[in-house]
Structures are given as structure tokens and as C-alpha cells.
Length: 260
Ligand SMILES: Nc1ncnc2c1ncn2[C@@H]1O[C@H](COP(=O)(O)OP(=O)(O)OP(=O)(O)O)[C@@H](O)[C@H]1O
Ligand SMILES: [Mg+2]
Image (cartoon, rainbow, N blue to C red; front, side, top):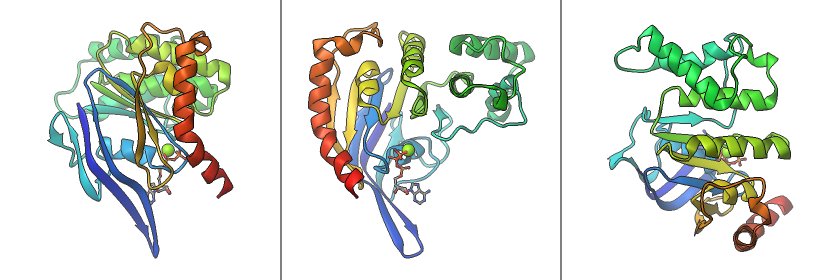
């Protein structure tokens, strides 16, 4: 579904040069849930931006369904790291926005209504249609963002630290809901997170990236059967083993980053 072929990306700003990604090669299969973890600034968001076609790699190629991504990739929905709900639109208006902006034949009114209702239900925001983003809690804003991404019925969903700023309990609740919505949907999901436990709990495979320039350090298949219970999974022996070995891969880069 998605292929990164020796992808490198360097940003230039005046005299400074930031080497964000280096030689990233990875194939993501259709219907796969892949989690990407790595220290801050290692190029995780950049990788998603490249996948969404918001920028181009300096070297290498990003392919989506075997075609090089050269412009905005309309087959993916992207829950960006920064919350970009429009404050002057209600929840319903925000969810409707991607349908208004969509290319191709416009959808009929009843289909729009049905799709919005279905995505509100999927994320558990029924009853909050008329609320404005400022009237929502942090978790509800995340749910609204997710509904906005799902309303287009994308084949692929890119999520950038969607639950990063939430408290530990709410995170688990939303992970469980996400898994419930994803399992059996056939959708490809690329999920970026700082949280190794979150990555192992939900993913088919976990990619660990190194500190900048971001390279793939480890790629680990997570053979924990589904459906998974994110609340209890972390007490299993399998989870412990994956955590230990992946933390080994991640630790040095995180510690190094913290020490500057
Ligand atoms: N549009 C841009 N212009 C210039 N530099 C950029 C741009 N986007 C990202 N960078 C730089 O590239 C590096 C990687 O950024 P990126 O946002 O991909 O990291 P990240 O892994 O998502 O970090 P975090 O976990 O903190 O979100 C950073 O040093 C950042 O400053
Ligand atoms: Mg980021």
C-alpha cells in the first residue's frame, strides 16, 4: 500500500540545515496497523507529511499503491499532530468540511448526513454536533478530529500522536475504541506515537526510529492475537518481552536527546 524507498529529507532554513530523515525504506501492507515510535524531532511527522503528499522527499521515493506520491494524496486522511479544527465551525461543521473540499462529484445531502452521523457514532460524539471546538474537552477534540478523518471513508488513515496530550486512562479508552473501529475495517493505519506501550498494544508492526537523522532502527512484528484488550495486554508476558527488546532499541537515542 505504502512504500518508502530510500527516503531522505533535509530542511534548509537560512544557513541551517536539518537532516530529518535518512535512507528510510519500508513497505506497509494494505490493512496493516503500523506504529512508528522515535525520539522527538526524528522525522515521524515528516514521514507522514511525505505520505500525505504535503512535501516531497529530497532523495528516494514514496509510493502509494505503486504510484509515486507527487502531490496531495487524496486517498489518505490525516489526523495531524496539531489540532486543526476550525473554531468558528461546530463539531458537525468541522466533520462536514472534508466532504465539502473533496474532489469529484459532490455527495447528496442524505449521504452527507448519514456519513456524518456514522462517524459521530464511531467516535462516540453523538449529541455534541452543535458544540464548538472550544466547548469540548481535549479527548473530545481528538474524537472530533478522528471523525473528520473517517468521514471521507479513506482507505488509509495517518495519525500523528493523536492521544499524546491526554491522560493515561483516557488514552487507553481511546486506544480501545480505535482498535474496535479498525479491526475488520480493512483500513491501513499508520500511527505515530512517543509511547512505546501504546505502539505495542495496538500495532501489527512497530517501527523504532533513531534520533535525527531519523533512520529505521528496528522493525518488530507484534504477534499478539486480536482482538486485543488494551487494558490488560500490558500485564502479559508477550507484551513484557516486546517492551523490553524495543525499549533497548529506543533507550540510547531518547537518553542522548534528553542530555542534548
Ligand atoms: N517544514 C519544515 N521546515 C523546516 N524544518 C522542519 C520542517 N518540518 C520539520 N522540520 C524539522 O525536521 C525535524 C523533524 O521534524 P518532525 O516534525 O518530523 O519530527 P517528529 O519526529 O515528528 O518530532 P515530535 O515527536 O516532536 O513531533 C525537526 O528538527 C524539525 O525542526
Ligand atoms: Mg511530530
